[in-house]
Amino acid sequence: MYLLGYYLVVLLTVVVTVRAGRNVRAKDLKVTLPSGDKMSMIGFGTGGINGVKTMTNILDDALSAGYRLIDAAAFYENEEDIGIALKELLPKHHLTRNDIFITSKLAPKKDLFGEHAYEALKQAIQRFGTDYIDLYLIHFPGYFPLPEPNMNFSALRDETWKQLVKGQKEGLVRNIGVSNYNIRQLKELLRNDHGVKPAINQVEWHPDYHQDELLKFCKKQGVALQAYFSLGGVNNKTVLLEKPEVKQIAIKLRKSPSQVLLKWALQQNVLVVPGSRTRKHMDQNLDLNFKIPEADMKILNNLKQAGRISMFPDIII
Ligand SMILES: NC(=O)c1ccc[n+]([C@@H]2O[C@H](COP(=O)([O-])OP(=O)(O)OC[C@H]3O[C@@H](n4cnc5c(N)ncnc54)[C@H](OP(=O)(O)O)[C@@H]3O)[C@@H](O)[C@H]2O)c1
Image (cartoon, rainbow, N blue to C red; front, side, top):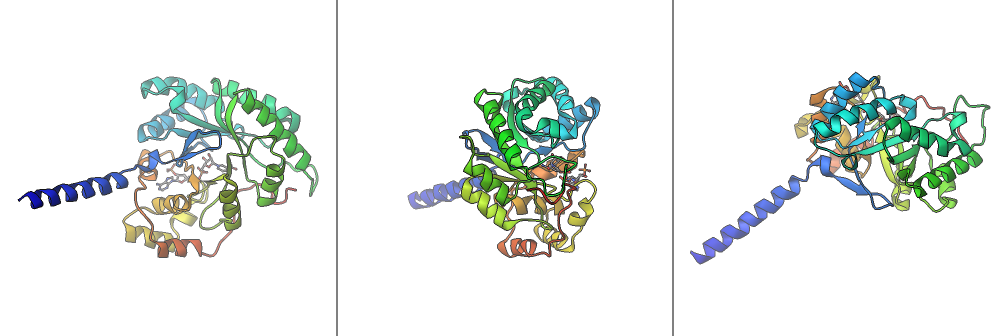
């Protein structure tokens, strides 16, 4: 009888432990940035969402679903909309500014690059109507329209970074990073980082376009890689969501194609910021407590890469 009781306790402990492990909700998954700040592995992309009313409605749903990281950019012209929306929504959701992680990006414009970057950061903070931004990225390793083919942006990138480091030291921004950087541009930055390593590199990343060498390099350097267009982007989503291999794996795992695409990234420690205007999709994109078997990961990794979707110019030196 005593032995039976003992075995029951052991069995119960194992079941509770396994269930608890399984129940680490995807929305609670975090990475630690070089500053020590913790950042959600799944954020909410706001590209293409504009207007205070629209933004408020969509962020209301996103916060209810559980998103706490908001990915914005000056280029999306929605920093002010987000700021106004959050003023109304934070109290409504019993949240404070510190519960939310705001990412924004320096627009790839000539008059914001180089020595102007510090001022651009201050203006972004003003647009959000907040005291600080959690993460500020150089959106693109140059600006466009490109002034001349093969223009070398090295010196300008260096000055831009120096200005963002100043912003971080002054507490205007907690973390700084880059976006759309290749290995060469990252190496250049790491060689002369003015005392602050980039926290993340946000790049296009999905089964039709993934740069494995870049991921390896970022992991080695402790730079988190964050994916955009995980679902193929607003205009091209059907390409990825309806890919037969993605659909087959989704059916097999009883998940949606979007969940497979997001989990494929997360399982390689690539962070994601899916965008959505649909509450059901927002929920689905946070419901990622499953594992893609290695054989299926291989299938997705080995799909013929169709190439990138983003319209950024190819050649930036
Ligand atoms: N750093 C950069 O250069 C850069 C460039 C582009 C984008 N970004 C960032 O990355 C974010 C994500 O990109 P994105 O929003 O353009 O593209 P995305 O996340 O790849 O795809 C968004 C599209 O997928 C649909 N979708 C979302 N969840 C779905 C689901 N569960 N099932 C079916 N469809 C679903 C959405 O439709 P519904 O609205 O109907 O859900 C929307 O049309 C942007 O918002 C932006 O923050 C960064």
